[in-house]
Image (cartoon, rainbow, N blue to C red):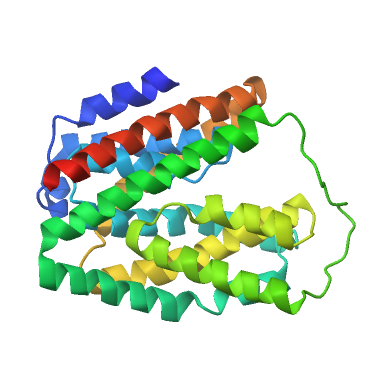
Amino acid sequence: MVFTFLDTVSLVSTSVLSNPDELVSDPTFAMRLILIGLMVGIAIGLSGLGGAPLLLPSLVLIGIPPQIVIGADLAFIFGTKLFASILHGKERNINWKALVFLLIPVVPVMLFASWVWTGIKENYGSDILDTVILLLLGTILIGISLYMIKNNVLKKDNLNVISEHSTPRKFTRGEKTTFLGASSIISFITQITVTGAGAMTLPLLIKKCHCPPKHVAGTSVLFGVAISAVGTILHYNMGNVPFLLVLFLLIGSIPGVFLGVKVTSKISPRKLIATFSIIILIAAIFLLNRGFGII
């Protein structure tokens, strides 16, 4: 899997995209985007990971500007998680009490993040903004990879498993404050770097929600849909969402997800997580190097 993913990235690295609309007149580039979407979709289906940690470095590597990458990835996440959230909703896998407190700060915080984004670009230029994005991305991806290794590879047992039949309970004032504060941080980081929302939301819900795993998953997915929808709208208003690019990625990712789900039962989850952790760590180092290179 490692070599397949790296071979795909190497294949597309020969093309540099200066204008996302160029893909309309470049069938070869469009096919390469579909291949990236396929590899990311397989990874999502195999491991349940969000696509951002693998998709972001791939798009940067083929020459797409970081600012466009963020908008494209937000739209991609919205497209991939929307269907999953509908399924979770039908299965009643959502803790609406927790979700409400997670959603309260999303719009104002992401508007503030957009203001910060625009301020950096207007006052310091696109190069500095690209550097900020790449360095933040690299740092967050390192944190995600180390977290994955610690909690999914080194940990032997899953503790504090909540019964599937437990009922939602009222949250304390402290827990409500934690949801509001954590959501504010996640919303700001997502608007600037798009990645890390799932990795930060899941542990929060596991520790504070006290609900069955399926409710944790459903609540996290629907929160991801909401936050990516707001982010996509804001980035679209800044001209950073190339919908055709996203379309080609989704075309590849949909069959990739189904393929990954079919194969997942035949592969050790622990080995999968370890493999993707290493890939994400390598991608993080690449992004940090690219960020320092712009400086």
